[in-house]
Length: 326
Image 1 (cartoon, rainbow, N blue to C red):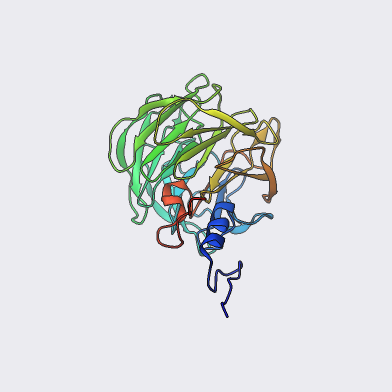
Image 2: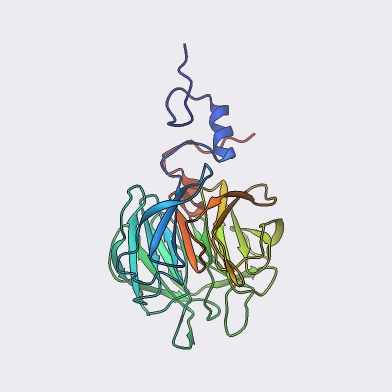
């Protein structure tokens, strides 16, 4: 008799159609399902399991980042790398599978805050930022599994801050929205494996501050920016966003990430209220976001990453079968 699988531990013999249904439904049980939310108010990091629902739980403190507001970050299957506010150039990292406090990682090439991050399995890119009245177009990169100082990557098309609208496929990183002295609707992209200046990709629907981004390996979704709209682009092409759903609030400055099937958005601000809510939506189909649970407190200018976001080959990396076409 076949030993049919248990969804809580992925044991047993799986029918390929069952695997496909679980993968496409976002509930395939695998180690690459944890997301971390860092920054905002305080110096703590919280975690959720993206494939489920429920409130976030304490993961660890932010270590050398004594002020983890105005944060950005990125991650791969093993590590989450974050940049915060104080000290400005400091980067820290967590081992995502293990609860604990952040360890020192390195320093950005230019001390700045309110940056944006995106990555694939190998390389993370930090773009833009602000410090002392200066808006930066700086992009730098780190090798995620190494530690040490960041290296110059190139320049963004605009100097801006406050864009947490960074996200990626395994080959491209996109950065959307932000503030240049006025609100921006620009989406930039770079090829992650190279270095060089960014290229204009297209525009988000409104010139706003405080977008956030998440992705599958093929589709990037931008949300927030003080509007409710969920907007997507096809990462391999270029062009403007298309609306395909809504968040429950016209928020800004939240954290967003994915398990490549399900996108999550946590925290943010609807002035003057700081939000502690987490919502989720299906990246492929769109539609209005659904309640997921809560962060421990209301927070803005936080950031999020996961072990299975769209920059990591839809989270597979040999850990599970790729989706089977219907």
